[in-house]
Length: 231
Image (tube, rainbow, N blue to C red):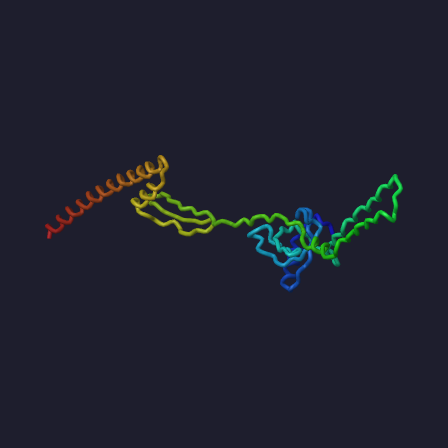
């Protein structure tokens, strides 16, 4: 399998089914995984992809770290762990020939130091400790934005609240005095003046309507007095 290709959507679903059945499928790291590309591991968990892009938890060696689907690919059947072979050491150089003759009986021989072969335990230790990969910080999703709206239309002041796409409070009517208090908290030039102008216009219209009603009431009371005198 090409180690440069990550997991497809169908392969991610097959991993979920395998984990649900109690299996731990093997995968290999792709080139986007960094220094551990080509090595293998076991998928032990799939977390929520909406919380983080790195939701494929892989165990390799003694570590369990999250990766994105692009960092791993399905391992071919029968694939095992790659064995780290020890590098052969260069042959020991022969000592230079001595120009003058020497007496073998008088000069003790210096034994050639034995060359130690790398132990199998050291090879396994190198295999179990792959290069660590920098784990990206999981970005936590913050709460949705909150919007509180104070509106004026058709002679009424209304307040509404919305968080994200969810309406917390539908527009409901508030008194003009309460609207003026809310606007007083907003230190923006021109906003409070505009609200006071609207309230002044409403006040003048209400006074005119009250005068008109008083005049109509006076006419009705005079008419009623005339009707009472006619009895």
